[in-house]
View (tube, rainbow, N blue to C red):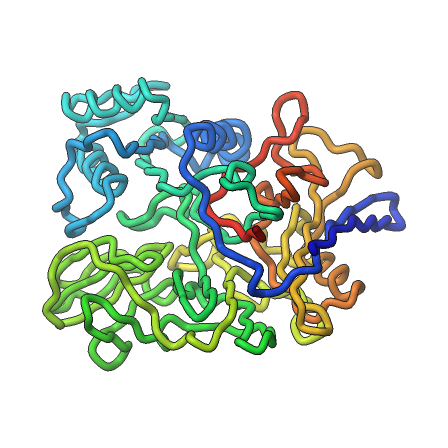
Length: 450
């Protein structure tokens, strides 16, 4: 039986912070869930960009074109592109539009977008009619970014049938600067997921994961995609044996070489390319091989986690083996010094001071799971001492340790932080409508208990 309580912490300076603590369930009760795409979610993400993201970083943005091609609409752009053969209509459309931008057939004129190519104009007009196209303008007048939104952007509160409990989980590509390759789509969740011995998403970016063995023993570890074998088209691939795996942050552009490049995101090959020299997907990796393969959509089966009951990779850890972490244990991109971008690009880098809504998946002294939500303050209006001020990662770790949690792994926080019990929020999310009411953020992946 799920148990939920809200703890309130008051600081000496008068600030207040609330934490929701959810327990009373087992590791095998947790399931990963991806929300179905919804137009309302598309609209909300567009609103967040126009209301919060671009005004905050207006000098970093040029023109951004956000779109989603629905299932019942044909894309006029071919799958055979300069970046290889792609199997996703969102990617194919984005690559076609970007090519026209390079050719000068799509350009900015003041606060409007000029599209000279008739096929592209008709395509964008149809998306506009369906409400699945949004155009925004920052300060950079000479830069146009084409940003497709993937299939899984939706609301956790609308997952059906409604689970007893659901919350957000993974980081996902949500920022212009996270889209550094032709193979990136907005709202793409990334980071390892394992349930009952089956890995559906691989580990990325060298970040920590909480892994539970079949006996229910949890630990925080750092899995590596190069140490995981995988099967594609009936062939087993192992890095250093019959393939080379390229990943961020070590590699942005693969070397030119004979053979196939397989761009892999989640558990699918999303594109094939020959000859090397490709940008590594920020939400995936590249497998390069000289093995002959059919150029067709191909599932990827990850091997070696058959003894894992549950695993999730987001990071960084806040508590590990009973010790509160004093800084980042997982690497995060620093836009000012790192040469190879990887998401989340604009993650706050002050572990001690940067406050925000936070989420953590934890284990207690008995090895049982606990989920913790640190409430954040309204992005529009904050009342000192009357509502939560938000928590730094250190403050999150200190709280988790204070209630006896042995491990705590940070999940996606910020405006994505949300927990629903029987469809209801028991605390406030930080994203708000103009009247300061809660604005649930659409996310692509969560954790649920039926």
